[in-house]
Image (cartoon, rainbow, N blue to C red; front, top):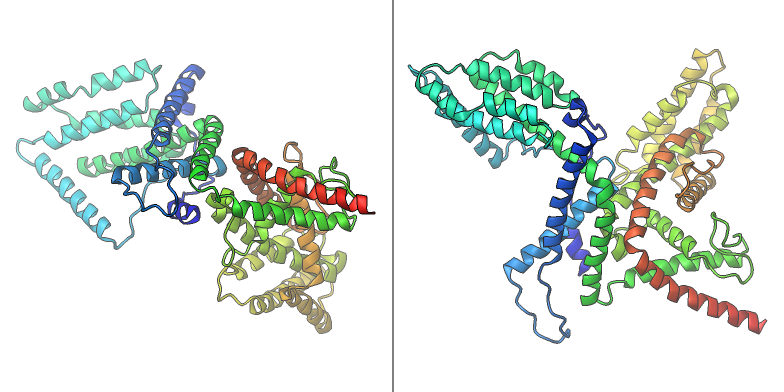
Length: 531
């Protein structure tokens, strides 16, 4: 039930690594003003969160009882609560979260209707301005909207700018000037553009400059509103980045509260989590039996040789690593990480591509010896080739063997070209055949090189999880040098996701692991007594 409910409500948010400076930065606003603005946004978020959290809830009833009718208001309140929770969650876990204007599909009915309505409005404005004498009703309304928008960009400390906008865009005075034939629209528009240039982010300077080159009134008004919409997006994204630190703790408490409410109605909502953590504990138990792990005090592992107990933190970390090998088609995702399933899938796909990239680079550099090791840009060319040819790796119709065959051909061609350019002897046909065979062998599930690279990637991620409280990254295992940058980027994103999930659901994990590890410990004591 929870799986279907949350999957319906998962949001698709925009990602944009480019973060333009805001108008506050350009104006060098005082810190007190910025704090007040952030607090206002924070209070607004709290108000919406509080409204969502206080929604109606169904009474607990036995499964045999007839279903109770749910009102539309209750359904809407529930949907709002899940939507708000998902939005807050997205802001926290997605460091590149950006609000972007909605774009309607090119040939959709909505876009056609919108374009027709907009064209009719601007045509009406143009017709009014061409009358003799001109009619300024629509133009004055637009100036009023522009005035309100400009005022909305100001903080309480911007008294001087507020007075300027209020005085110049005094609608009563503008109406009197229009009635007496003394209204100068171009002068008002010039003031508006200048004020927009003062308030906009540096990234919008080019758009402001283009406004000054438009001399016809109607196209200029349209362009002004277009740029104002962009400025609104900038302000909204600034607010999001400002509230993110404050939102983190509130969002964690809010998600935990909503999950607890659901758990009270569905007591079996931790069954998948229990199975997931049990498997992780079993994995570490098997390694412990083989004496492959060190004592629990070591951050890199989770159990000791012999009869030592498993470490709860290590079991959790192992469980999170198992999410990167998950069968999303045939197996339900654990309840507590369900909202992030798409993110874990994306990371899993990136790691699969990176595994093949690392394998190809390792066998290529091994085949070429030291000749290619110091050539700048060679590894990046190979990565680009692999990335393009593995773009459809996640599709059911993707043929890995065919793609690796193509990759092997292109890699050999690139190797020979690079060797020739730098005065080395190109590969003989026999060496080319060997290299192609090694690359194509990566399609085999039991390929030794792939297994080696994969185990080292997993070790790096495990070390990253265990040392996430430290500022420095763990040491990179041998053989992963060519893919270090990509691996570290994935690791940072992965650890941020895991740490936030721990912050929200650690009480539930502690409770489940307490039972699992108590059972494990009792079994160890029994075996010790028998021996």
